[in-house]
Length: 376
Image (cartoon, rainbow, N blue to C red; front, top):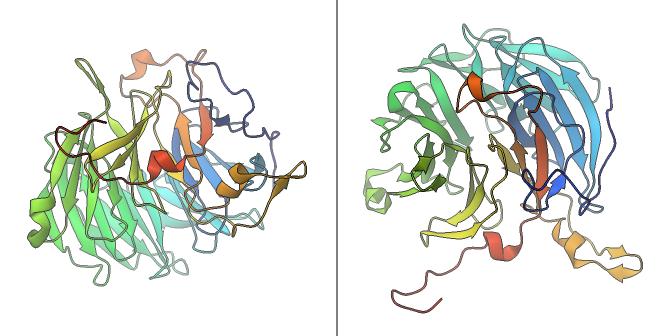
């Protein structure tokens, strides 16, 4: 298994101020082209990134020392658009413009093709409860794969190309071209539970299912997020809000993810900003400084090692203790997202970077909304 690069500790100087205004940790040896996905393992702090260069890179983010240690690397023949982890964290799935998904075993460094479509694969997820892989493609299908078989267990037609998708336990939501949404209860995966048009007026860019599976977030290219519930009885709780805008400039919402511990969420956009929000109190918790490039993707760590007493140079270190908890790290990419087309891309000056942010509790813990007219 090929290792690459060297590690950089938390707090070290990272990139120039315009791409790292929040002074977050820069991960070493980022991909050489646009970064398409970032995913933490569900079983550890291993993190994988994929790229339009075809690279699939893996780091071990140390919870106790705050270092991102390069662990493994491989390169596929075509641009990679999505990634996922097996439930035990031993295997990475990478899909993209070769119209398939490769399964990469980190222990043996062996690859095997496990899915095939007629067009690029935009999203893939490993469904632990079904022990299957699900893939969404621009060929207007979602397919379910038993990894022991080269043929799909089921092919679900979609009304259009799959642009956005998320899976959380039994809830799966798929967003397609023409603003169509397909909601599935994976207890009966071959049946569409609900089919509807997006409440947003423009193209769906990203989806994130609620932790309690009662609904989902929709992010669009118009700098707007919809908070939407599955069941009709909860529709009164639906609302939308504007974000990732500056004056007359409107930017796409590229990525959303829920904090594993507090249930709040983050949005990241083409404006280079990432912000933390509380949907229950309908307020922004923290607006981070804007990076000099778009943020195309990100992820929270989901299951770090159990906390334990730590000491640094003989003294207790509460900062490192905090890093040993779920959601203690938010990883995000700073990279061109093609939102302005090829004419805005200059390969000689383009930067592709990955940063690690250690969220403070005040940034991600929900709080009661101040009463109208109250002083803040």
